[in-house]
Image 1 (cartoon, rainbow, N blue to C red):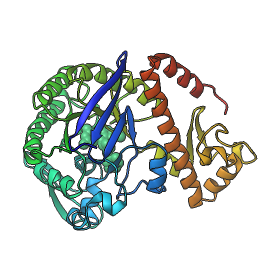
Image 2 (tube, rainbow, N blue to C red):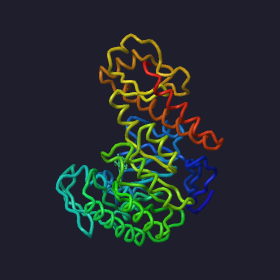
Image 3 (cartoon, rainbow, N blue to C red):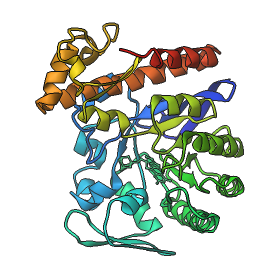
Length: 373
Ligand SMILES: CNc1nc2c(CCNC[C@]34C[C@H]5C[C@H](C[C@H](C5)C3)C4)c3nc(N)[nH]c(=O)c3cc2[nH]1
């Protein structure tokens, strides 16, 4: 047990890193995939299942929880861990990304973002200080600075404006967060697809001596090659003794290639959202259970999986559930997908620890390319 937030680099293999984050609520084995919770739940899953799959940490959802049921109410009820019965670490995003993508009317200026709730149209102001206050009310263990994430492609002048605003907001978030030994506030590197802006953002955040660093402003419409190039430019500028979190990423292939460039933490709605839409992630690649070709297939998704959803149900049954829009279809495919993602992360961690990351990554990628499954 510890009352501090610490990161320990345990092994490296090329650019890939194996580490451990220690916090009062528990440890996070990195590279880590963080299942995405929305209103304090990972959709279509019981949190005990999420834990049993090997998830050390989940994401909470600042924007949704502040609108409903309200951050002050969650605090009155003991904070998000008690509210959702998840006693392990929780990371919360600042809410800015969603305001930019979800809410209707919104105005952004030096003070922060003013927006209307997509639920009831009520007006809300989200300043850097208010975002940190909300994340504190949720009792989040890892809090993200408020930032401005812009979609790509974008004009370099616009990328620079948003990056420099985000740096000023990082300073304000650091001040608002203050000194909370068992918790962390991560800065977010911006700079779009402009190498010199990425370096400037990373170096400025580096000098703020934060407990962890996220790489933001990616997975916003750019090709994978651009995202990977930005990682190759950004990660070397970040301290190697602090965790690095690539926000919103990604597919299994994105994750393998980003780990190779020095990323430690990932979050993505893909496995959970795809599961609700009939898509199964497996070590043989993606399988769309909506497709009629599965209607008579008695095989499970993966008879060697330890996850019952992958091992014990025929593709014909899963196809039937998905086609009939049965809740069990979403439940089983979400369970399968998170189990697959966490087994991929465990294989990645073992590969780095044994110095076999490159061979392991090649073998995994060949499995996906096997074709007809
Ligand atoms: C997909 N690509 C992408 N995502 C990104 C996110 C959100 C990360 N996921 C958190 C989130 C976002 C939504 C959906 C769930 C729950 C909750 C609301 C928190 C994950 C980002 N968040 C911030 N603050 N800044 C970014 O630059 C950024 C870039 C991203 N690029």
